[in-house]
Amino acid sequence: MDMLIGGKHISSDDLLEVKNPYDGEVIDTVPIAHRQTADLAIAEANKAKDALVEMSAFKVSNKLFNVVEKLEERRGEFAELLTLEVGKPIIESLVEVDRSIETLRLSAEEAKRIYGESVPLDAGLNGKGFFAFTQKVPLGVVAAITPFNYPLNLTIHKIAPAIACKNTVIVKPPTEAPLTVIKFCELLNEEFPAGVVNVVTGYGSEIGDYLVCSEGIDKISFTGSVTTGMMISQKAGMKKVTLELGGNDPVIILNDADIDKAVKGIINGAFLNAGQVCMGVKRVIVEDAIADELAEKLVSETEKLVMGNPLDESTTLGTLISEKAAIHVQQTVNNAVHSGAKILTGGARDGAFYEATVIDDVTPDMDLVIRETFGPVAPIIRVNDLDEAIEVANDTEYGLQAGVFTNDYSSAMRFAQEIDAGTVFVNKQSTFRTDNMPFGGFKNSGVGKEGIKYAVDEMTKTKLIGLNLR
Image 1 (cartoon, rainbow, N blue to C red):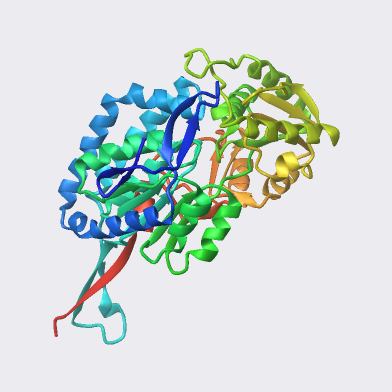
Image 2 (image 1 turned 60 degrees about the vertical axis):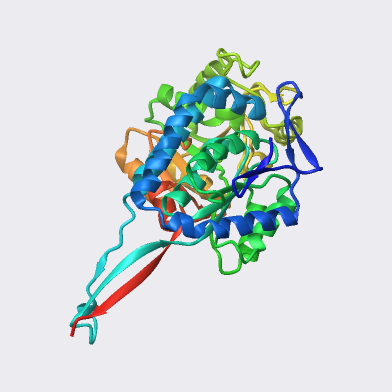
């Protein structure tokens, strides 16, 4: 596939192979862009700003709804491509496409709801006789740098709200999985003026860094690692930034919890997309009195997962994004075992596959739970009581989402108030998101919020207009 810049397909002599992590076969190639290509995309995005601003909110909304219809018609095609380039089971890819359709529909609706407000200037000194109101106006050009794990949905979470509030966009898709992003942006390009959406492929170390530093960009929306996010925050200057940098999300199971319900939540939370989920369950913190029962049931349910060809509808556990990623997970688990942890099930690797793994006797000082382990691993940390559970849960540089299972709402509310995370769920695992909710964490989990209405707030600036009526 080619890049998309200024409404035209742009290629390059340098090509990057996109491989299927399941069998290593080359699916397609994309160009490796360099700085002059990024300059072209920046110029085209800035040139298209006026054409987009001149469109009515009604027209922008309708065009986004047209793209909703196109994506619905090609649901199966997009899901298959997602599975081929990411390695997730086809049943999960279909869910991602469905969520993407919903995210796009919410953006189309929000395009008609970008309100200002009246401001009572007469509440201030010398304000009598003035009438004032605010407008939300677009920032200009938004650069969206997107990750491999949910390439379609997380890209739409950035570019659809941006267009809804009349920003043009430049997308730098993930190196490992750019194809679905390009295909989707072609749908947008069919509806909007040339240059409203542009896609530049290549390596983040060159293209991403260049976009971050460019004076032709007004906003950076990035999802990825803490290291890269910190670099962006240092180099972005006066640009607005939204950084979604992942998590080390805990789920706490208290003595009075419904253990079967908790186990189901852990299975969904720890093994979805082979554990490659920023809000996935990364730490299972359980009161010791019920830990044995929970571990036994968790192992039983984990062993029901089916690892195999991601295109097979019976497969429930696909590959990691690459063999390198699977090797890293394997090494991290092995290091925990050498430090005293015990694998209850799983722990084996085959190429880019890594078995769904339950590991017990994990301590909070192990690398497995200090850093974000991006793989299908459920580490069990045993604690004495709620006080220790909260202490362990907060002992991390991250603060994205968290969950607690309990039937005592006093404990639930204490947990909700004391856990330092952007979202706290009661009787639900951390791995839950609706596409309209404010999404974003505390501490090193990032800056700013996604979720359509909240993303629009992050992608506009407020202008005050005052009328002197005296």
